[in-house]
Length: 317
Image (cartoon, rainbow, N blue to C red):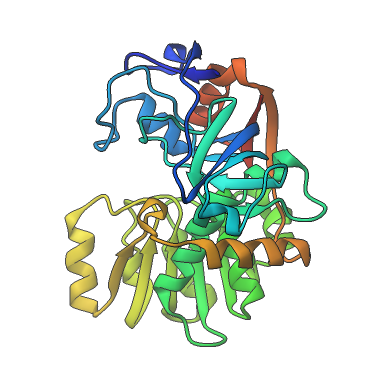
C-alpha cells in the first residue's frame, strides 16, 4: 500500500511517501480502507523519536485516527462490523503494521464506530482519539452534578470536546480563550470565558468566586492548576505535569492529579458509541481545520507545530 512514513527521526521533512506491506487484521480487528487521517501532536512526537514504545525497525508510519470503509474483517470483529461499513477509528501507530497514514489501517473492533450520520469522512476522522481523551478527562474528574469545571486549552481539538461534553453533562464550564476564540467557545457551550495566558488561574478563581471542582488540562502542563481546585477535587491532564512542585502543591491541598492516555484504555467501545450518538444529536461539533492530500503531510506537521490551528488537519488518501 501507499503510506506516509519516515526512516529517521527529525523535522517534518523526514515524512515522505513509501510502499508499505498491507496490514493483516487479527480475529478481533477490522481493516479500513483509509480515506481520511488526522494530524495530531502524538504524530509529531513519534516523528521526532519521543515515543518510547516504538520498538520495530523503520520505516515507521504514524497516525492515530482514520476514517474510511471496512475492507476486511476478522471473525470476532464480524459480530459488530461488515465489509463496506463506513467507519472511523482510533489506531495504534506503534504497531509494526503501521498507523493511520496509509491506504489501509488495522485496529481492534473496540476502537471503531460507524461514521456519525450527517458527518463527512474528514469530520468523522477527528472524533475517536480526541473525543475519547476528552471523555476520559471528564471521567477522571468524577464530577458531581452541576459542578464547576475549568478547561485549559479549551480552543484546541481535545479542549473543545471537553467543553462540549461538560456542557452537555450540565456542568458550569469556565474556558480559557484568546480574543479570536471567544465566539467559538461560547458556541461550544462555555459559560464563562477568561483570557488565556499567565494570569489564567487567577482569572478562573475570580470568575468562580473561589476554587473550582476540577480542571481539565488539554494544554499548559506547567500551570499549577491544583492551586485553584478545592480539597478533594481533581486535575485531569492529557499533557502531563511539567514540574514536581505542582505535585507537591496538589498533595498539600488534597487535590488529585490524574493523567489520562487514550492508548491505555482497554475497551473504549462504549465511549465511542456515546460520542457518535452525541454527534448525531447535534451535541458535539466536529472541527476540521484543513484538508490536505496525504503527500502534503510534511506541511501539515509544520502547520501544527507552528500553532494556532482550531480543529484538526486531515490528510486525504
